[in-house]
Length: 204
Image 1 (tube, rainbow, N blue to C red):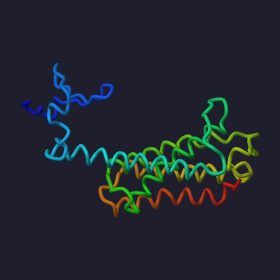
Image 2: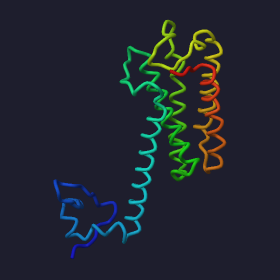
Image 3: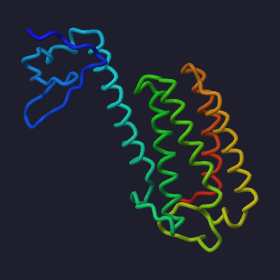
Image 4: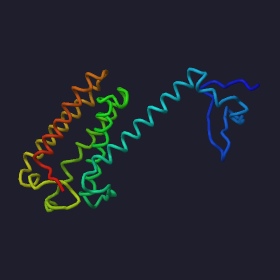
């Protein structure tokens, strides 16, 4: 009978068709080690399984959010020489973060303060780059949902971006510790998205 290793010594890998347990310089088949039933009979193992399931749920939510916020255009490859591709990707990344945050508010995934902070950080990062992604001469582009009001009212558009930066930055600087706090902060941040989209975005 093999002794079960300590948590900080164990590493589980798949080698071809065999699941192996690595501990320090030793490795042996998981079935021989009795490890296949280990996660369910050990509190540390149950925690790992629970954390892994939570990660999968968040990943699925993120993928769904990207698809939902892609708009009428498909996902495009970011090109540093093409600001349209950059802003499309920036907006879709912000949309994915917003989707994860919405899933926590709706209860589709459990609230987690680190996930909330990550979402606000991603949204704030997106806001920081927006001002430079709508250059003159790019008013009409069928790949983008950017409306002509962006170029017709540049002062108002930059003011909207500045408020978005400030609100998302404040949410990132003071991350919520509870779901109720998160709802308030998220509402403040996303009110910028709604206001800006109503005035400066068009449907394709």
